[in-house]
Length: 101
Image: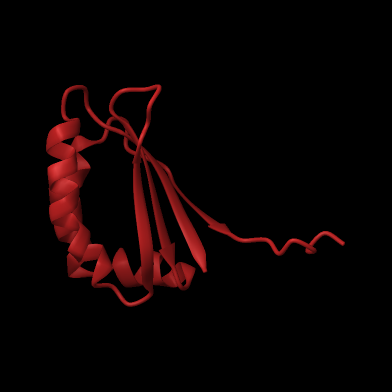
């Protein structure tokens, strides 16, 4: 399992509209093979900041399956204009508890 983690800085005053658009865009990512689950968290300390976590079966499910899909083009139209600055997307893999021994 791969965890995609993205800190989203939303343009000032646009958080409500972003949340509505995110809910509209969500089925697009959920329809992609390899999608497992997601979380969208709103920051308590900083207004207009969110953390998006998406779990994928493989890295390629996100980087190729989603990003090269027609659904991604719709996702971009719905969401990318809210970001300032444009976010860095990072991917993580879980370490087993005894991996360092």
